[in-house]
Image 1 (cartoon, chains in turn brown, orange):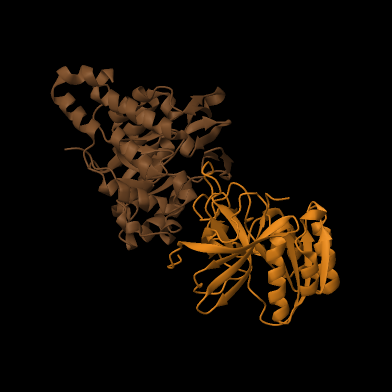
Image 2 (cartoon, rainbow over the protein chains, first blue to last red):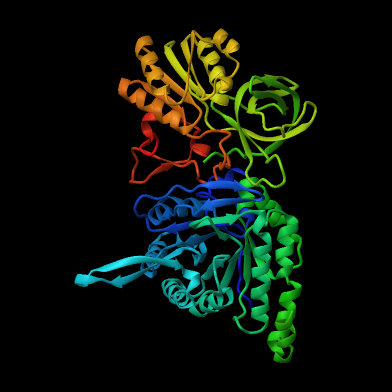
Length: 310
Length: 261
């Protein structure tokens, strides 16, 4: 039995607080709405910016939705409407992520949360002891750049959450070794992988997204699917995000082996894209060709070499 | 939350004519449920396939005729990729909250920047119809960028031209000398910040737009969050308002304009 993942959700940072998206269509037809990024409120939140580039957008990471706001205002709104929510959580330290999860977990409306996504593309801070017994936090690249850090973070997150709750890890174009990071994330307790085609641009906190990165997304899905077939990463469903703006793009990702799709900049272009992609995937045959081939590979190790090769 | 669903609707461009440095589009849509107001904007799909973000334009006039539909007047920058008369154009909107009109006839100052001057002019005409005395301040960095001053002069008690740097002095002097009791601003957030500050100094009401339709890097649907502005008051620190959804017209005294010159 494979893990359930929502087929189509908005990508983190593209659904506002959910209410904005509800103006464009019925959220109840979606498997889940992705809410986020959720995190601890801190300091002066940088403004998110979008700069158009040919066939894409360069965006600065969206400021986090403060977890208090999510718990007090947003989750009750979703629960009152019977909607399912996947919370995307972002934090720069293990403590920040566990704290956020703890507060979500204690919410009276936690029943509406059907999954949690941990953002491994976010910047990580390492706490080092300094002179005088004080500690200092230094930024040390993204989580996904260090598989060991991914494992620790996901293990801490898994500990905070009910066993049956979907925990997915998001990593992408910023990751130097996606297979190693994915293996570590799954080892830590992730039950699904979200593969994002967003690639770093201009500065550390800026990413290129949009149709321009669709090939990066498909490449990551193909790479991970091959790694799963070869047994280098445990069998988990993959979710593709990045540049999937239309039916054709979504179906391409689906046939490459993605069980779910997240629509990001496509929503900004036209919010109804979300429902169009949803309809496209609803019509698509559930088991993908590669996934079926992979299952055969898993049961008969002799065939693993074939999948490794392609 | 708004219960009405926003749908992109197919319209037809019935006119596309030059208006100074800009183009004026008349678009016929199926009849609007509620009349459009100055300060609202429309969202149009991206012009070219290699663009992701949609285009946002101020609505600068609306006329509904029973059995025919609603004609929206849009004054837009001349980008060279606008639909010609007779072609179709899909539009979402008019969206957002428009300017509120005073309940009693008062003196008002309307400041508008560049292409938003057409929306400012429409607001001025509405105010005049309501019996107000209206002074327009047209702000533009290039003299060519003022919108249709002849018609603006016809529809207002006075028209003053300035640039963004001089806008604070002009608006302050005008509001002081005319005893204006309400200040309006349409256009970039910097102009809104300026007008809100002038209004605060004079202790009068201000209604300003919290986003600039037509600015790049804006989705217009309320999803991207690039237009978020911090509020002065709120239940918690860090309460923000999203002008695409809650505005674009905001009360100037409620927004924390600290980050804007």
